[in-house]
Length: 129
Ligand SMILES: [Zn+2]
Ligand SMILES: [Zn+2]
Image 1 (tube, rainbow, N blue to C red):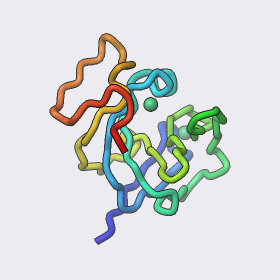
Image 2: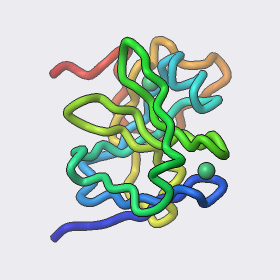
Image 3: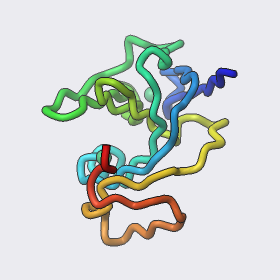
């Protein structure tokens, strides 16, 4: 059975739907820290299962040599990280989300003040493929 989650940015200008989320994890890399102000808890989804339903003209893209980052051009909310085969969609924008984190990535780079409080597996960098 497919499951659809709605998400909205801080200003409400952008709304989107995520169908069949494939899992949730927390990325502690310095790029995510700079992008969000902290670690980034995200939901993995196939690009085909991510749809902007309102405000597509507000979506901005920060190009970078790694995964480009999509955000709201009005309020600055972090939307998703484009990993190519998957999108890593910021969990905080989806209010009905009932998943729990299944992994922690890039833990070697986490902020010293951040305390990981769950039992999900931790990886210094990325999990082995
Ligand atoms: Zn916004
Ligand atoms: Zn990251």
